Length: 359
Ligand SMILES: *Cc1c(COP(=O)(O)O)cnc(C)c1O
Image 1 (cartoon, protein in one colour):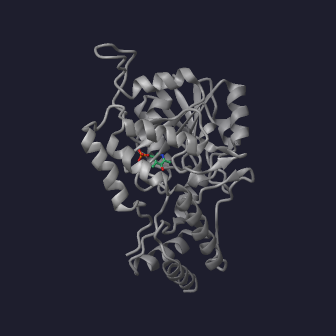
Image 2: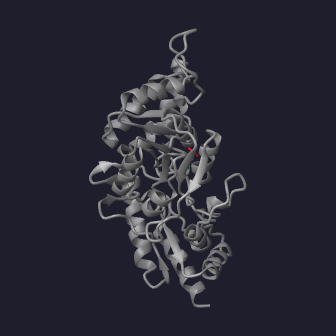
């Protein structure tokens, strides 16, 4: 059985050692020493001035929307994980979908521009599959219309844009450290901003607004993360370079094996150095995608239809047409990709895909 992804696991002894130290201290959560250490090490590794470790990537999005005072309409991508849209609705705003660019699968700035009304207060865009959005175009649209930009960078650990960590862009950037992501803390996420006021506000938000015992600074929620999660994060961070290197190698090998497969891959921008978090392929038709998927599943290999359905089809969003996203969602498949996936397994997957194509 080959799943689409498997969580990376550090050597068990290393994790046990850190957990033993946590148990020894009997300090399990509430801004513990490992949470602090992880934040410091993540900032150093990624080259960031600020980062807050939070419970997951979804609450990170909610913090971003909330702290920026976003109201009314949020122009967003229909091609992402459901949390990108649901967090907008959860924060009492209305998602307005701007269709994606068929080459990059990221939100198309021209469509963003066309979707803006006097009711729009922000853009929430996903750097899909770790490929950066057209950051410059979105920035100039936001500046011209006095809008905030939030980037859902959940796929982006290790991606850089013009030599800088991708998390630096946008008014607030969010990420996820969920077990299925390239770098993980089992459950977890982060918010990143260069604005010290926003940072301080979000630091209060993640801890109920507590400003000392019995003192509160604004309304908050529980968005903290624990020492157990930080322990996993610290262990995995020692392997982040290995993980990124191996992913790049595995993607190159898929490229080589699949050079005769009639599929297209999303094109990252030239200024980007991507993390190869996923291996998405776009078939020529829905039928070709289905045939490939069924052939792989017949051999207990599970590719995944990331992302299907298009988020514009959710029943709690206004009706909107997103033909490019709908079409891509019908033809895309992400192939298995994880640290322990072997060359032999990749070769078998490639053989089956090429065979399915020739039926
Ligand atoms: C994983 C993911 C999220 C949600 O992150 P969690 O940590 O699981 O809450 C949000 N957006 C995108 C694009 C994701 O892939």
